[in-house]
Length: 283
Image (cartoon, rainbow, N blue to C red; front, side, top):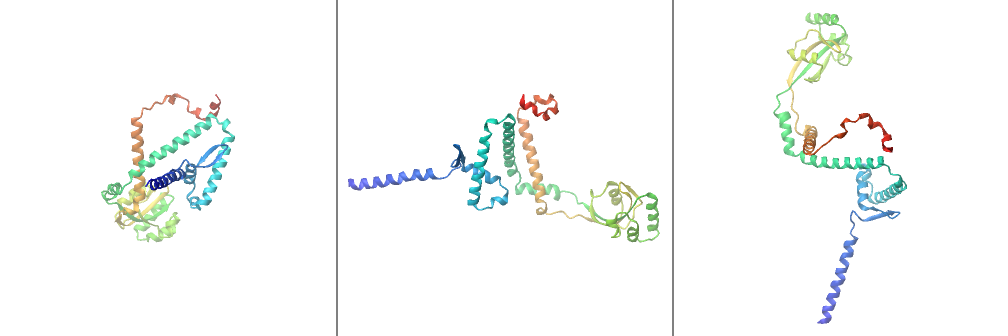
C-alpha cells in the first residue's frame, strides 16, 4: 500500500510541477520580445504599434507584421537611446502633451460609445424630422440679366405673350440654366439667395415675378409648381444624426467636467506672443 501511495504522490507532484511552467510560458503584455542594450521591448508594445498602423497594413500576415514591428521597435529604441542624454524640456513637453491628448481622446471615446443608441437615434429623428412642419419645395425658372432696363424689357415681352423659355435661352447670362429655358429644377428654402427666395415664395404656380435684384444681377422668375418635400428615412440620415448626438454628448461632458473642476488661469495676463518665443526653453 505504501508503494502505491508513493507512486500517486510522485505523479501528482510531476503534474503540479508542470502547471506553473505552462503558466509562466503563457504570453502577456509584459512578455519580452527583444532587448536593446538591456532595455526591454514587450509584446504589449508590439500590440500598440500594430494598432497604430493604417488598416491596410494591419491586414498583412501576422508573421510578416511580427518581424517587421520588432525591427521597427528595435530601431526606434536604438535611436531613442542614442539621444537619451540630450532630451530637452521641449522634448519632455512634446511627450507630455501627446500623452494628454491621447488620454483625452480615450475619455471622449467612452462618452461617444454611450451617446448613440437606437433609442437616442429615433428620438433625434423624431425631433428633427417627424415633428417638424412640412417643408415646401419649389420648381422655378429664371432669366438673369445685368441691368434693370433689360429685365423690364423682357418682363414686358413675357406679359405680352412671349415664351419664357425661349427668352431665357436667348438672353439669360446664367448659361447653366439658359440652355434648359431657365429651368432651375427643384429646390427648398435656404438654397437660393434671399431676394430670389423671397420672390419665389410670394409667387403662385404659373406666375412670373417683376425684376428682382440680387448680387448676381436682375432676375425674372417663373414659378412652375410647388410640392411638399419628402422627409428622409431614419436610415438615410443615421450618420448625420449620429454625428450630432456625438457632438452634443462630447460638449455636454466637457462642460460638466470643466464646471466641476477647480480651474485657475494665472497665465491670462501674459503676452500671447510669448507662445512664439522658443528661446524660453533655454532660460
